[in-house]
Image (cartoon, rainbow, N blue to C red):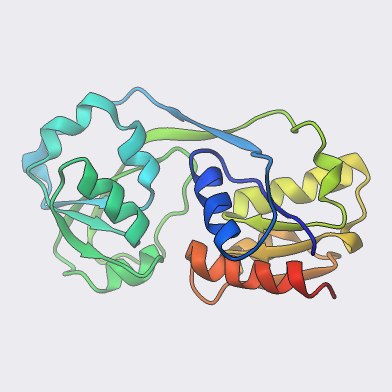
Length: 224
């Protein structure tokens, strides 16, 4: 069985590794990014009807400025984000299936939403709501981990288009053989960002760790 390389930042990387072991996989954690809090100031909560969370990192790194926003209900893009939001004392109004566009499509168009987000983010496609984005954290590139050449003959789990694009750049810079690396991507957008030439490239049915690990297991246990 081939090892599964996880390149997402902590603490998500370790969470994915724990879940991967339940799938009977052999995970290796080699993060390519680190998440850091940003300085920010909370706007007046009276200007908004609700909060929008698309990542648990906004809760983990939001800091004391979150306190003044606890009176606003929260719309969360997926269950993992919702769980972190609950644990920090926020009321959950809605939990989506993992895609921000489908979540927004299910909400009233007249809502005024405060989106606490990362510095690097994908803007919603065609939101009907009024959305103000306030970055509270940044996911920054870190030096290539020692032993990263071991991704050859491995399966790499990709949780974002940024991770996919960086993997492609590193493969070229380090002279890695793309044809000996299989990729499991959490979304079609992530798969597209990885480029071409890989041994295999599968996209999860839905943007969740469970769906991602299901296709990763297929690649790890049944090499092509």
